[in-house]
Length: 418
Length: 121
Ligand SMILES: Cc1cc2nc3c(=O)[nH]c(=O)nc-3n(C[C@H](O)[C@H](O)[C@H](O)COP(=O)(O)OP(=O)(O)OC[C@H]3O[C@@H](n4cnc5c(N)ncnc54)[C@H](O)[C@@H]3O)c2cc1C
Ligand code: SF4
Image (tube, rainbow over all chains, first blue to last red; front, side):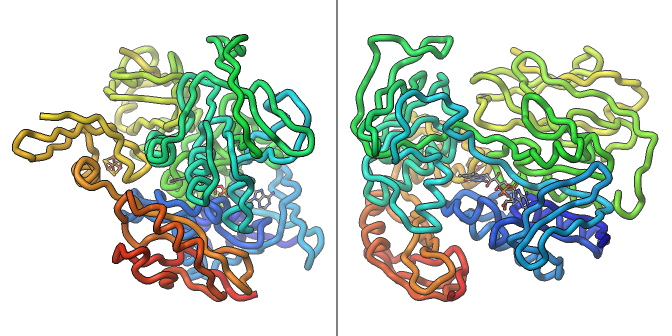
């Protein structure tokens, strides 16, 4: 069986940044496996600008941001295989991939980096009533059809869900001459970035209806209209609030799910809230030598954070591949409480951690003028005041190694407080 | 004096800005995390601009469209004029990232450039 020090599953921004940093950490035997016919992942279809301001100090479009990392991979001569889908990973880090030239091949990896990204919540998961007429797309599928393949998917559009892809597509379709009639959001707040509400909806006068959902899809062959209704606090439609919109297209932008079928086959334990692997401060999963980063770990809104996280995972994977398992880690559990839905990482080795570890999390509701509080064993360590926090925007707090000096901490908690 | 609450759209951080237009015409910005936010706040209340991104039909390429953007931001009220010209434009592959696809689009003085490299088929 062929052996590689590091095998990276997925050639999106996470996989690319992990490969570069593993190489720069001294690992010369890295292989990237990508199922698509080009590197770059979802960024290839995200033609809007807004990427990379934090990493490159300039505002790039998705393809431009991807190209910078692809260049870095090529400069280092890191090998990658396209049109190669990974079908299985064993707990012993045997990776099975399939492509048309080689057939099914199993390689053994010193360390594995999971970087498979995420997928959209499909229509079935939303339980929408009615027939299944043509004209219903997930927003990401519509984005690919328009931006890569060049089809205008509809002329009169209703969008369900205010996730970023839906907002971006509202503007995109408007610019291409379609009429976007309304964006309906089930929750009382938007799931997308504030800047996207401003520049994708407000700029074009597209209404956003919060606490609304689609209650009926009209049309048998092709969508002819949509009924939306207001919902109560239990998210149940309120009778009598129905509004009809004629349209030929319904776009669904109802959230993303980390793509973790492979992680499961490797025996990786998943976090119930994020849907991604549980990891320690080195971004290593519950299976030694298997690391995770990017949207497969938890859904990110900023690609800059994906790249930063993936660099850490790549460097740690390189360290693992050269040294093997160093047992003797003692982990302290991190938990979210009072409005903090999850944390990544979920556990941390306070004696062997880096000097600074960034913990990322999301909150459950919109909070104004509240604070993020950090507790060690119930004792408050620091508090950060925040003007606004919202579920659509990832938050972070930095833990320093010296803050644990001389304290045997059993539990770290992060909470939203007054 | 007039106060406006804005969201900075210069990057996905989306900082909440308070922009004050003083009686003497001076503009002050609060709430920004970086200098780009101050510049945005001031511009948004005086002459708002946007970067336009779209795609151009590509003949003979590996994919059917090449993604493009305005090389810098253009006046907001010109967005649809810029889009009309982009929609009329066709290009033959190959295209290299950064290639000028339209010079001086819609009289804005700004070029439209490719944001992706696409080899010929
Ligand atoms: C529509 C949209 C708009 C966005 N807008 C912005 C923005 O304005 N600014 C910003 O900073 N960020 C934005 N983001 C976020 C950012 O682009 C993503 O967080 C980032 O691309 C995630 O990178 P990734 O590498 O984890 O995943 P992906 O880019 O999804 O890459 C995963 C790769 O893994 C491959 N793969 C999956 N399974 C397998 C397998 N079994 N075998 C082989 N390969 C596999 C896939 O083909 C893919 O290429 C946006 C995201 C989306 C979806
Ligand atoms: S002020 Fe700076 S950091 Fe904040 S959104 Fe604007 S550009 Fe981004």
